[in-house]
Every structure is written in C-alpha cells, then in structure tokens.
Image 1 (tube, rainbow, N blue to C red):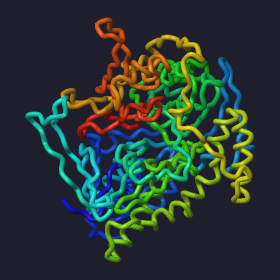
Image 2 (image 1 turned 90 degrees about the vertical axis):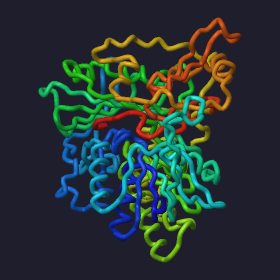
Image 3 (image 1 turned 180 degrees about the vertical axis):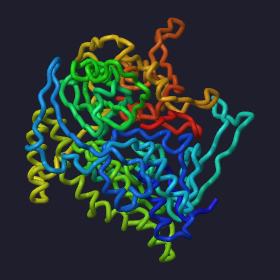
Image 4 (image 1 turned 180 degrees about the horizontal axis):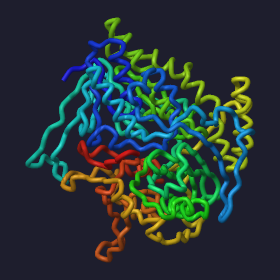
Length: 543
C-alpha cells in the first residue's frame, strides 16, 4: 500500500502530524497505524496539558468540543516526610512552573477526539495494527510492515496466520512514544545518539480513583517530593482532581536508582498510606491502573531526529519537560513541525530524503525554548539530590527564564539508567509493607484494572538476547531486579531443583502493560521489548 505519509502511533504527536498534513494539503494520502485495540487504549499520561500545541493545531478546539474542560484552579508543591508535609511557596518558583491556563485532562480521551478530527479531514487510521519492521530501500526508510498476526509460540505461522503488509510512504513518521521498538532500531542503525547524552527515563505509575465528593476539589493540582523515596531514588507524585469526582494519582521513580532492591511499584503503594494521601482516598475506590516509562533526558539527550525517509516525533525522541512534568504540548508541536516539513517537501516533488527542516524547527523553535531553560534540573537532581536540585536547578531556571541563558551551561547525564544499577551486595533488601487491599494493592490485582490482554498462543514479545543471563548473571550480581522494576509482575525467579541452576526465569508476558521499563533498566541490557500482535496489551479507559 502506497501513501504520501505513513505515521506510526496514534498519540498526540502522530495525530497532530496527520491533522496538520491534511490542513496543508487535503489531497495528501495520510495513514496512521496504532498498535492498541483502539485509539487511546495505550495512552497513559498524568496529565496537566499546556494547550500551546492544541492552540496551534486547532485554534477553535473549544468550539469543536475537545475533552479539555477542567482548568487548573489550584497548584501546589509539597515535600513529604514520613508523617507530615511542608508546602513550598509558589513565589520562589520560576513562572514556567505555574499551571494557570493549563488543563487537567485524560490524554486517552484527547487522542480519541484528535482521531475524530483527523478522520473528518480524510486521514486513514488503522487501530490494532502493530508496526513491527522497517521497510528499507538502500539507506532510506521507505515504509513499515504492520499487521502480522497468528504466529505460534515458536514463531512459525499458525493456522490463522496473517502475514504483515508493507505500508510505504514518501515519508515515515515514528511517533510510538517512549522507547518505541522502531525508534530504537532507527537510533541504533543510524547512530542518532552520537554526540548527545544518553536518554534518561522514569517509570510512571498511575491510578484513577473515584473519591468522596466532599473531598473532591475539581481543578486542584498537587505535586509531591521526598517520602517515601528519600535518598533511594529521585522522583515524586502527582495528584490531579479531574471531573466527575475522579482523582488521577500517580508516582514517578527516576530509573537511574542504584539499589537493585528498590521496588518502584511498592514505593507507589506505600506512598498512598501517607496520612495526607490516605485521608483523601479513604472511602473511595480505584477504578483504573497503568504504567509507562517517561523520557527524562531533556535537551541534551535529544538524538538526531531525521534519517533519509523518516523522522522521530515527540517522546520517540524524548521531549518531556521534566520539572514541568509535561510533554504532550511538545509532542503536538513536533507533529506540526514534521507535517510542515513533509508537506512542503512533497509539494516540491521530493520524497525519501532527509527532512532537515524538521530538525532545525525542533532545535530552534518553541520546543527548544521549552527544553533549554530546564535542561540542568534532571542532572542536578542526579548529582546533588532533591535539595540540591531545588536550589541549583531552580536558580538555573530563573536565570534562563529572565535572560535566556543557563548559568550552569549544560550539565551531562553520564551513565545510562541500566549502568547506574549497582551490585546487590552493596545493599540490604528493603522490607515493604504488604498491601491492605483498600488503599494499596498487589501488582496482579492492579494489572486487572489496566484491562490488559495478550493472545497467549503468540510468541513472547519480550526477547532475551541470552536466556542464561537472568539466572547466571543478574540473580547473583543484582538479585535479578526485573522481579521488582516491572510494574506488572511480568518477571519471576522460580525455584526449581530439577535444573542445575536451581531456579528458572519466568516471563509472564500476558501481564505486560507495555511500559518498556525492562528494556531500559535491565543492568545486562539483555531484554528487548518488541511489539506483540496488534490490538494486544492494555486497554486503558481514560488514562
């Protein structure tokens, strides 16, 4: 199948690109491939949306009924201790950190609405179509293979096998989100990270709660730092009071933590037992759960974003503003920039070349302005801890906001998150409290609230480069941290006296919520996340 533009991923970046292409030239033939069962099924974000991208894409979005209605009315940062808390005044913070004018949204619902706008313009959207391979013509990306289904567990064609089809385009836009499998292939094949800092990541876990209406304050935004992580890891929480008495509560752990015994999911569950949080949630019920990796490297980790015939959009490149805890606006802006470049090139009779205009736009336009000002906050946290980051990073942001220059210049990240993991012998196991089933829950119970499903007869999409490494290397050296860093209970070490090693490494791929943490944090870099057949994975309602 031949198209002008092939877009992989129906998130904010991909859908914005599709809409903008058709706004420029209604005759452009544009297709969007989405691996989720429907648009929005794999979208997970906080989210407080800065509408700058939406304003640029669809200025009359309010009149068109966009699900962007809950304006932020209250905004606070809080440092937690084990039993108490201290609010950080808003006045010392740079203006860019404030949220007036922003909206609490479900990005899943926003993407569903964007898909409707795209289809009205004539964009073809194919959900349940996982793009599993790149189609190459020499050094050029010419398209993707999508829709392969029905393989047996050993990879051979099963009785209901359907071969994938090639979807070719004059330009291919990769908008898979964080640590996408095709984006990873492109970055490695073309060495796009050369000369840039390694990408950094966090794991974000989120629950949606319906709470007592008497406690609900629509439009309230709260971010916390400190307990329970302390010095074990960087990170924090968000609490967003959305509409319909719902609260979006989430917890982020930076994945450059050193202690392999750290258990991010258990930290999240423990966090909800803080008196201030427990009081809010008591009497309510959790209605959804999910998890997703977050790109945190920022400006200095942006790879080269163009290759012949293809571009990296949004979080496929890593455009999250970490201190603002926002990336959707930049994802949308990147989609607009990509569409502008592609449409102009096609109008000029070009195809398959490198759209350097897109790279230039990202590195000199509003995305650069947003990311450059905050570029030292994440490395400052990694080097100096939470307090040091608040002081040094805050000072650097203030100067950058006022004078458009960073007094700290550009700090480096150094190690990858995988390389940051240290041997287990340097630490003691952490004793986490058992979940009570009211405020806190075990992983498998919570995974049921992600509505995840995988066809069990297909090949496991979580590949091991060397199947012996988990037991032979990771278990004695790092106490096999996959048992803990996975927020869905995919990985287990099971005692088995029938094998020489005395234990087996078990992969319960059916539980996978597609967060990509294993691909990022495995200290041996032995796990490779690949896409399962289309339509599988989580089915998030309004994440």
